[in-house]
Length: 288
Image 1 (cartoon, rainbow, N blue to C red):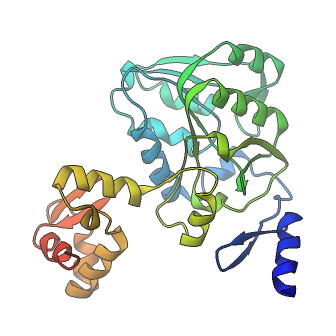
Image 2: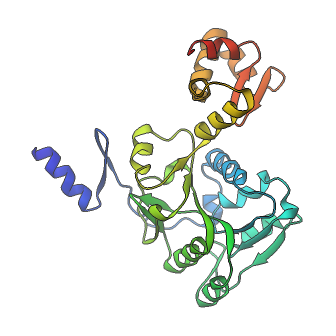
């Protein structure tokens, strides 16, 4: 009982998060906030995966708000029919990334914060107040329970307004942002439609944060796509990628695995699931 009581007290004080069967320490605020140029060089693979997931949410005719963040800057690379979209942002790098498309672009100005490449302040808020969006996508410096964290109060206020003015609200973040604190809590996960993240998040972390909002990653989306495209049973469609990989690796060895895993000639990809032509039926039959 003493250990449980101690964990409860540490949870209430914000020094850790209680998870099923244990607890996890909350990472502290960075002593020095990383600049945008520094952030864009780290966790690039994870950011690309999440950006693809966010792009799938965007449909022709949408008016979308995109906040600042190096993950959000990548969304444009995966969007279909961008010429049908209206894109509003207060991030200069996001605006510049979308300039290569035929989308209708609106850059919301204000005081320019060079560290993040974002326009903030009273003018930014005034301009955003009267704009409405079908969908909003924002990033975070971290999430801690239901708290969405930012390093700067004015940045957080602009992101919160973009979310409030949207019909659908999405948090876009890589797996390294879980259980992280920062200076300013600008929004609650309870008030967003979904948190979009990586497929390799620890199960206990997913379980914890699913109490605050819907969590979407490639495993969940891939299962849905596979179910509709291949007409699999729900149980078959739920097979995560790592099990398919494990079977293929064990059956064919490392050379075949790394040679064939990403080869479209050897099979075909469906929303991140890889089904080798000769292996898919066998793998799925394992779980009939």
